[in-house]
Amino acid sequence: MNHAIISCLHANLPAVEAVLNDIDRQGIDTITCLGDLVGYGPQPNEVVELIRKRDIATCQGCWDEDIIDGLNACECSYPSQLAERRGHLAHQWTDDQLTDENKSFLASLPTSLRRDRLLFVHGSPNSQHEYLLPDMDAFAALERVETAGADILFCGHTHQPYVRELRDGSIRVRLQNADHDCDQGEELTLPMRKIVNAGSVGEPRHGSTNATYVIHNDTTDEIEIKEVPYDVGRTCQAIVEAGLPKVFAWRLSHGFEFAEQAEDASHVCER
Amino acid sequence: MIERWALVSGLRGDLETYDLIQRDLKKTRGVTALFVLGDLVGLERNCDALLDRLRNPHRGDLKPDCIYGWWEEQLLAERGFRGERKADALRLSQGEDAVSALLNTVNPSHLKWLASLQFGFIELDCALIHGSSSDVGDNLTSETSPLILLDRLTRLNVNRLFTARSTKQFHLELTGGGINSQVKDLNGKREQQQEVPKRSVIGIGAGLNYTLYDVGSDKTHFLTASSTTNPKGKGFA
Image 1 (tube, rainbow over the protein chains, first blue to last red):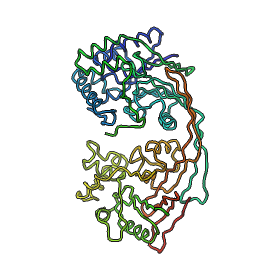
Image 2: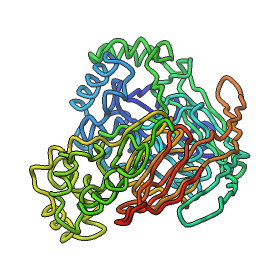
Image 3: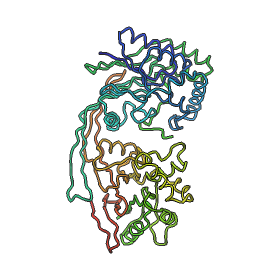
Image 4: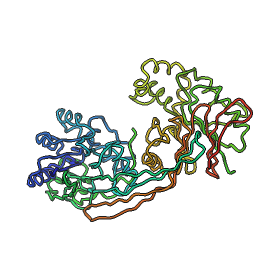
């Protein structure tokens, strides 16, 4: 059976509507959302209410967490001082706009969802703030999936959709300790695992303005990355009219957040 | 020998043990640095005398460079040095009485100094941390999955991780292996092969059990401090 995974909606209602329509057209009933319903975009209440109305299983993203708990991300989560300032502005604006009911909904979201050997998180099993980038250290990537006890890890947060298969792994070790006269050597065979990043519905950063999401077939384990065009201009206009930083509209209209990608895949905010 | 480090942990207020180790080190050739990897304090005894000695070394002592460990983390959290966090891990594992006992073993005059201690040191290509790069309470042993050990090394981009949390002495080397990965995105597919880098995780022991590390030869020596003339120990290449 096919199920759809969406992530990083970022209060972009036209993009969310377009993606849900695309999923509906394919007759897919099961949708999982990996969080970041709000932040950057101009329609946080509308997006949260649509997800609630559709009763879509959702886990909490870093923006959802920060709106509830106060700004949690340290400055090193942002690639520049200006990016941090813009992020804080968007946080304050979103905090002012969201209704108490919608905030309660965001607060109620779990940090992960699990269906058998499928695990759904926003950033990584460690943190909503950790980036699992497509080319990060393969052993570290496998560790995230394996330690969480999953076969396939679905994540978002990077806004770049990808499917990464980790296979044919092994680690040879030699142990010496105070109690043994001889070295002990052994080899650990690593299991095959997958990381699937759903990209972003509301703020794509893969080089196109199209919203992205993924479809997974839980019988064949086939995964398809989907691109959906939507009315970017409508969202950009709403961003400007809301008084949010105009650069949010500019980068959305280019489909790439120039010079604002996180480079440190292993960074976890400790604040 | 270029340089030799002594690595100590788990003193937990035991000045006598620290004194024995200092005596051993005076008799040991070439030790240039003493790192105390946390757990300076504990429940068992009043810790003030040890803390005084660490902060104000005696003449002839090898000057210690200290970081904080799990017990300091619990103490500092309960004393309000960690924001809203309290000594929840200690409370959960040993109960309220243990938390109260811990508070009574350290004079508040030491708290600011304890709070100033770092999480770890990076020296050359080595990380010196109480637990691991993941958490001060990360309990790495020779039984821990090599995948997790490699992750902890990778997070810091170091070749050797010296850890103390487990209280065990071990030297686990990652000697080989690899992994293949395929990434598929909207631009197509690409294959990657990655080899296991030659890296090590070293458990340094606790209390009387400590470790010497020869930087130039990359040799680890597991020792036990004693009141006799020579420390008991065993060297490993």
